[in-house]
Amino acid sequence: MKNTERDGQINAGYDSFLDTVTNIVGILIILVMVVGVRAQHLPFTLKPDTSHAESAEEQARRARAEELARRSTALLSLRRDILELSATVEMVEAERLARERERQRLALAAALLKKELDEKTVALSQEERRREQLAEAIAACERDIAASQQRLAELSSTTEQVQIVNHPTPLSVPVDFEEIHFVIRQGKIAYIPLSSLLDELMSDARRKIPRLFEVPEITGTVGPVGGFKLEYSIVRRTIGEAEIAGVPGAGAYAQLRRWILIPEGNVGEPVAQALEESSEFRRRIAGYRPDRTTVTIWCYPDGFADFRRLKDFLHERGYSVAGRPLPDGFPITGSPGGTKSSAQ
Image 1 (cartoon, rainbow, N blue to C red):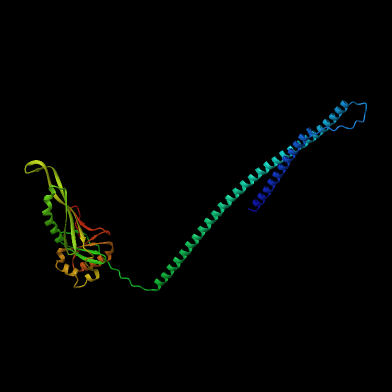
Image 2 (image 1 turned 30 degrees about the horizontal axis):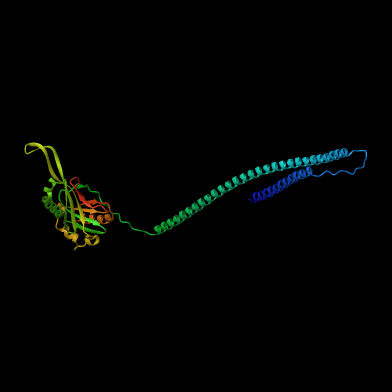
């Protein structure tokens, strides 16, 4: 970069010198032209008459000839000077052009070198950043290894007794006995009065079925019972080309499309409390025979551990248990196309 600045300063000084020489040559040319013009208008000076034999006319011609010779000599001298100055100007201009081309070449080379230097600087910065990131990753790995080794040493120095519980996998069979429903959600278990809600659904639907002659679908809500409501929808299904009352034609019938169970608030009791002797859960299952009853438990992801505890508790007392897992935010629903619970 210092060499580039020095070359730039030399080129700038040389350009100033060329401009000065050019201005001087121009001034000299103007002076020559002015002297030539003045020489043409100078008055003739005649020498004193030294010879009585020469006439005045001869003396005038001789004087004019001498003056013309002198002017011619002066003009030739000026012409040579002008030609020399013109040649000098051309040489200086050629030199200036050569210096200009050299300056442009050096500027281009400097720009290319600067670009290459910038690229190498960027590449070096990226490489340094990558090395720093690798160093940080290595340091993090070393810290993790040290922590793991320390934990391994602690575990090796601690003798821990592990109790292995073996749960044999029974076969699941569809439920054909009496069924009682519960739901586990947010650490609580709640009894679902599904039979009572379905009975109310049938009663409410019988009153609304005549409307299916006018609309293709009817909806309704029953409850609440035990902290739950039930929303349902019934649709009209058509029978094409059916034999009705001995007359070929079209018929229709009502079919339950689905029902949705909606809890009212955070119902139920904590699972730990449900296992106690005086809990609502124990009171509900006490009214059913273990050999003729299936306990269906609807369970959300946050209640899988509680489901295992309840399942073990119910198996110890001879109840069959059917698990119905549900994704978060998905309500309990039923429809004619659904599946029956499978108990273990």
